[in-house]
Length: 400
Ligand code: AOS
Ligand code: ZN
Ligand code: ZN
Image 1 (tube, protein in one colour):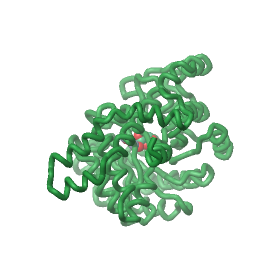
Image 2 (cartoon, protein in one colour; image 1 turned 180 degrees about the vertical axis):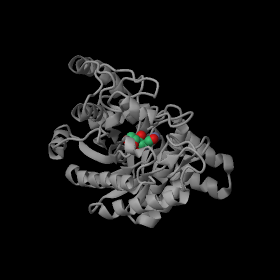
Image 3 (cartoon, rainbow, N blue to C red; image 1 turned 45 degrees about the horizontal axis):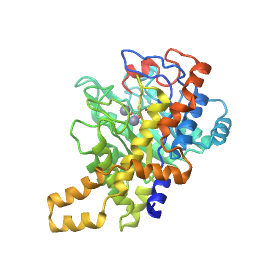
Image 4 (cartoon, rainbow, N blue to C red; image 1 turned 90 degrees about the vertical axis):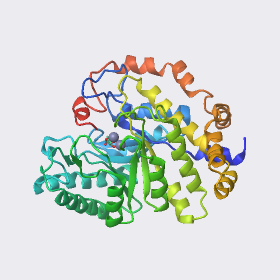
């Protein structure tokens, strides 16, 4: 295999979310999966299995307080023993009753302070886990016109983001996630990438935008947003998943393989840019999965997700950039398009099998997982626990 390709594939990273390993569902029902992880330790065991088989998923995003422990040093050691690191810290300011009217944008100052103090606690957690990314998602918004003052809420949000930004440890950054709607149905305070970008610009250098693939209106060109943010140095990371209707949180690359490819195409192009700042931004992007598996077996679902990202990335690596540039400069509309689709239509599975052979991973990670007996073993050891771990039913009611 071509050495550049081997190096690029070996450097790919996908962070898996702790909450993807526990039972999760919709607001109608959470089906209990046999062997679903019941606590953060078991979630790390599952993540280690995904990393062992794929080789590109060595970090795990934590959700506080779902994954809260007394001793983060011990958690860090536990992860390390499994060749893992603790990744992004995701604070939760959407679950407590007190947040009914919002967290950092709540009309009540005491609630805003409570939310802010949880965010700042999470900054402390980062210091103990060694995490460098704080992922911020707010459920804040309103359900009815006139319910609250939108400009005032914006100012509250700005103030909180500024305080969190200034509290970040050295070398850390905050990733600001936006979402069109849900759980708020009239107005969401952080409703799109432009709003997130404006807040990031205002609060400082260490604030970047997080793009969750499920958080846009139908038909929005996400790769266009990605290109813009990359060029502005403000693309911080992704929450990968797939959607057809809204924030469906399905396995990434299932409903949207071409979109995922086009996103990776932008990232590969930026990583090869002549502009050093753009290259740096691209290299520092955090690739994270944010999915809520409902009827799928958890570990296999995560394996599938990681492998779908690997395939999309491998296809993007095959784009012939010289020919693409030539066609673009000639104004050859369809010629340029075909350079891209040639790469997309390439069956990269043989190439990836070869890469796995060279890096000591099983040729077919899913088959290896199925044959390993892992699922049967955890089902035996952990049993079937109704909605234990992961997203409790009430979180799904809030539409996370
Ligand atoms: C909610 O819709 C967002 O995607 C959040 O990123 C995420 O699902 C939640 O914060 C779980 O941690
Ligand atoms: Zn998300
Ligand atoms: Zn979401």
